[in-house]
Length: 311
Image 1 (tube, helix red, strand yellow):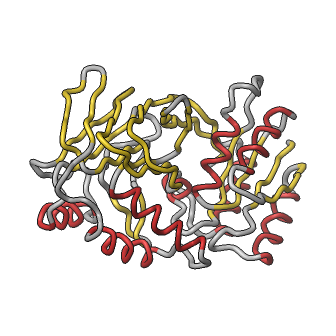
Image 2 (tube, one colour):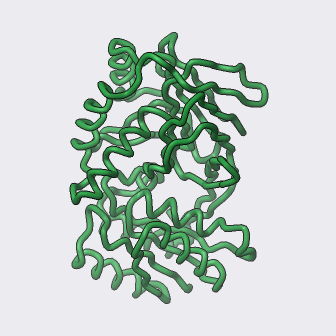
């Protein structure tokens, strides 16, 4: 089996020694080519080359952003032909996608599980989400967001650019600080979609392709507990950002449960094929924890059976 390993050398939770151990372990099991990412979007380019050159497998050692780029590179329609399988080894701060697949959060343990899956020919086909805006299309593996949560992602990315790590504590503190800076009086967004009642006055929207949405350390955060890789997209939108409403929601999201959060100010969708969020003014937008700027309209679609995963 020919495999390409994409390594993000700046991944939060790995070092050169760990990477060397993992490369030797994978190299003993497959015919391995190792590529390091050097800039934003590089993983997508490398994954596209792996597809075009007929590799059987692409393995990613990195965080959710690198995995997102790789998935988009593999799904590039220009490539055509048989698509390589994807395997992931967590190396970022949250590793939501890998953990949602059931992988350990430790890269060495996760590598052992991936090697077992390869030996046993154990795979899983999953669906992805797709966001479309201004003539662009991009896939996402676990979540997208418009509004307040994307503002938090933007702020943390700015800190990372200044050399600070994206730890769970930093996300929490940034979310608290950003809450008092965001516009909590003038909602910008409206939700529409085929067969979906129009919902106006939306401050923030979370779009999920699986559950959980994220983790705070070891604790999962569950805005859409029924979301899965085998169904359509789920959504939780907030029509109120007052402190009592937000605190009530946060308390529910941190509970282990299999029911929707409760609140008259919430808009919720499950297993939808398509919907659109349009805004009166540009609002912050993120995909898989990657900040992509401010937009006024995004259409989300469910793409079933998009990728074959070794897991």
